[in-house]
Amino acid sequence: MTRRISAAALAILFLFPLLWSAWASARTPTGFGMENYRRLFTSDNGIRAEHVLNSLTVCTLTVGGTLLVATLGGYAFGRFQFPGKNALFLLTLAILMVPYATILIALYVLLEWIGLQDSLLGLSLVLIMFQLPFSIFMMRNAFEAIPQELEESALIDGCTSFGALTRIMLHAVRPGLITVGLFAFLTSWSEFFAPLILLNSTDKFTVMLAVVNMRTASFGAIDYAALEAGVTFMAVPCLLLFLVLQRSYVRGFMSGALRG
Image (cartoon, rainbow, N blue to C red; front, side, top):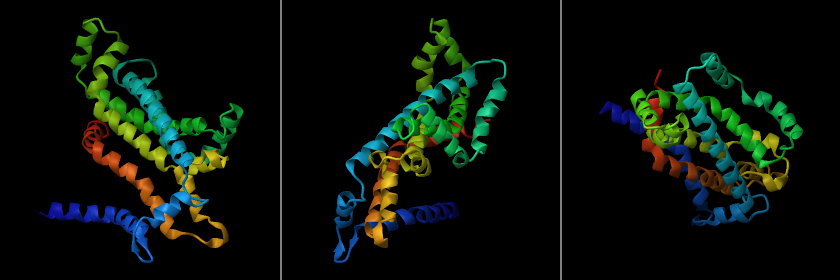
């Protein structure tokens, strides 16, 4: 009973800011309605369709790139033996100890040098890089949790290592893949600092930058109700994805992050 009360109290604590934003976004001087959302999508400094498309593009590239590299890296670290394996894995994890804000200027210069500065692809590559340490760690542990006999039987039947990965192993580590993909989506959808530094053109702004742009309205006239509508709009995809994938997310997190 005490555990349930504690869980309910924590749920209320975490849900209160979201519920408050949803309530404030629907509140108007005359009651409740969708007027704030109308201003959010029609005002000059509000969210436009191109902002949503930019965010979805960045999310798609980030999730796809993270899953591809983390799956191959996690499979290599989890199943193969090669010189310097542990040192390379520790070096990969060491990226987590570097505050990414401290190297964004260097990445800005690097992206300009390779012609990807002020581009959604360049932004996605930076987000992928900072997702990889956690993602590779998760996928390595997910692959290590799979019985070795399952892969060996596929190899005996004539599969190559890559064939065993694509035909057998990926199905077995699906919860880990969903966990990694969900984290990559949440990060890329809600990221603010990296787009602020790496994107210069307003037509390439993401939804997060568009929402923050409402906070810096001219003459100090900030539409807080529309701003709350923007916060609620950004939270909805994250909540829906988590609710749909929560079972696989928990399974992947338990089998990956708590192993070893």
